[in-house]
Figure 1: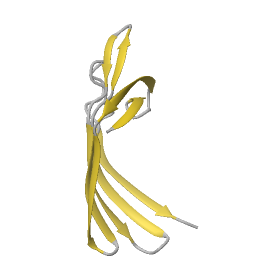
Figure 2: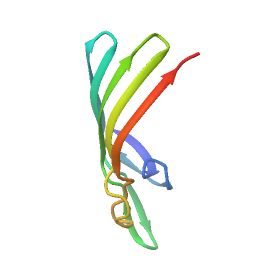
Figure 3: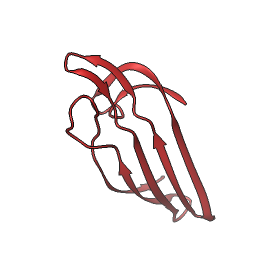
Figure 4: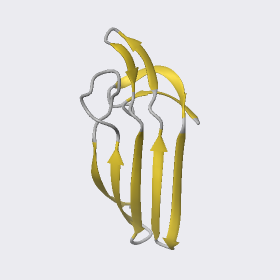
Length: 104
């Protein structure tokens, strides 16, 4: 559980605080690979002139490859809920995310 006031993971703005469920599980099938899932319950961000604002729940499945001590590559499928459904259930959609990080 965590306390959050973000609306669409902070993309739109912040509102009233709410306690939400959050969890992440990863397994390491090899010393340089991680495979996992993550889930976060949507925040009930309170009322507005347009009505009650509720973030969609979001989840992702991801694979990380730690190529070297300094280079990591990550591929994830992320679903943050449907975009454009109005203030009653906010999300920014879903799709594939690819990431590369190099530490100097």
